[in-house]
Amino acid sequence: MSLLSLDNVSKKFNGVTAVDHVSFSVGRGEVVGFLGPNGAGKSTTMRMITQFLDPDEGSIAFDGVRIADSRESPKRRIGYLPENNPLYGEMLVSEYLGFVAALHGFQGGDAARAIDEGVQATAIDGVFYRPISELSKGYRQRVGLAAAILHHPDLLVLDEPTEGLDPNQRVEIRHLIGALGKDRTVLLSTHVLPEVETTCSRLLIINRGKLVADGPVSELLTRARGATRITVEASGDGVPESLRGIAGVTEYDARRVDGRAHVTLTVTGGADLRPAIFRMAVEKHWVLYELHQEAGSLEHLFRELTMTPGADMVATDAGAAK
Image (cartoon, rainbow, N blue to C red; front, side, top):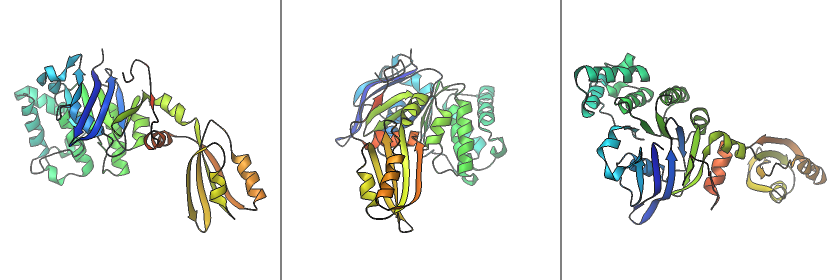
């Protein structure tokens, strides 16, 4: 049985559909990446899972029990770090975590043990007695994570946990999430695709409120690498126009760099267009400065699924959307 399942869940705001009949399930012990462009419906979906919002249609079940039928029990088993990470800046870290422990019903020695485990798991012992207002963004995120795991949740929902962090802080939080995922199920929303590749075992992509991809990260990467990107930099007559007309090109981007045409082509089907481009350059008397090909990436797949109307790759295996 899945730990979390969504069945045809929809949500509208003032008549505008934010989430459109989304269905998926998450098994125990999975670390699942949840991706999508801004406004795609990620945060709305997470707020419904964590019961901050109710779906207009469909149902959400936690451990086989509909959340609508048993609201308190699922809440006690879900940890949530929202995108804005609301903290009380005037409190010391110790005071804030004590406050959160009390909200979860911990008292005395149980509260102390829960706080100590959260502090050790997130490595914030060095700032335990400091005011939250004095902490860096990275440490604030750690405090938010500590609060989210104090009650030992079975499911940890993280909405953009590395937003606004510098590269070093991103790596630290990424490692922390990987460690937390060893003991619990994690649903991670992020715009940072390398985090998905290094942290998650499975990936969901939502676009315009609809689920457009669901599958293991390794399989989606295999599909992404079925496409190739070719970079061409050349000077001469009609460079962008000629390259755009080559058969097999699915994406095209052109700009000028130092007076030369810099064109990026995306090609599917595994065709190597470099010989044809080279012959074209010779025939048209172009000066060729660069002709480079690289395999597709998760970023290419994300762009394909979120920029092409109707594109989808929803898997049909046991962990896929219904």
